[in-house]
Amino acid sequence: MKAIVVAALLGVLGAGCAVGPNYHPPTAGVPGSWAGVTPQSQPSVVTDRAAELAQWWQQLGDPTLTMLVEEALKANLSLAVAQANLRQARALRQIAAGALWPSAGAAASYQRQAGPLYDTNGTSRNLYQADFDAAWELDIFGGVRRNVEAATANVQAAIENVRDVQVSIAAEVALDYVQLRGNQQEIVTARNNLEVETHTAEITRKLYKVGFDSGLDMAEAESSVATTEAQIP
Image 1 (tube, rainbow, N blue to C red):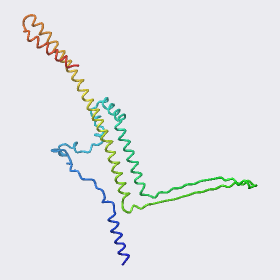
Image 2 (cartoon, rainbow, N blue to C red):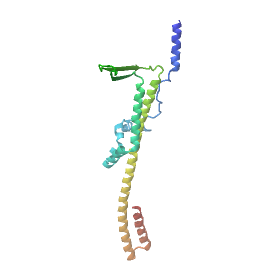
Image 3 (cartoon, rainbow, N blue to C red):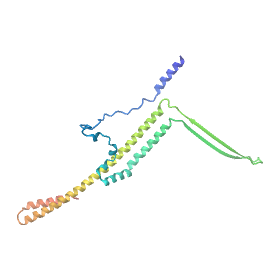
Image 4 (spheres, one colour):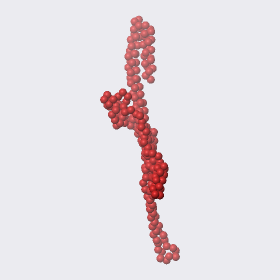
């Protein structure tokens, strides 16, 4: 009877000292697809395309943009820091997981000792010593397991941080590049407009000289030329 009571008390004590319940990530209320989109109408939107999205800038078909993004990912210091943090998190996770297993150690030494001065034979002795020890602390209350779970969560967070930095770098490079291409196209358009407006101003000037156009028409044509010229720089 006493053994049953002791066992019950140990069970209650163990349950009371357990390190919390098992961790379960929170459930996010995210819809399965975009609002108003069904798999029948837009199957490509709800299909898993993670591999393509990881290299989304290549879909623009611009080799220069692809080269710039790849160079930025290689040389960016923020990404290097995020990757270093990931390596550190993985190392700390291995250290935490190592506490679940036995640890063993060994040591050995050797010494050669000469005989005393009064030893006429001059004999020497070899001394050997070897030690071995092992230890294993049982994770009865789950503290080590919780440390491993926390370290695993840190690794996952570090992985997502690396991905976040990669997305930010690619987006920033692509945004700057698209703006550059847009500005270049605006310059081409402005130069084409300047050519047309300059030709129109020359015709208006000639018509003004022969009396077919007024001075106001000539001033407006020259103003349009000056305005377009000012936009190019």
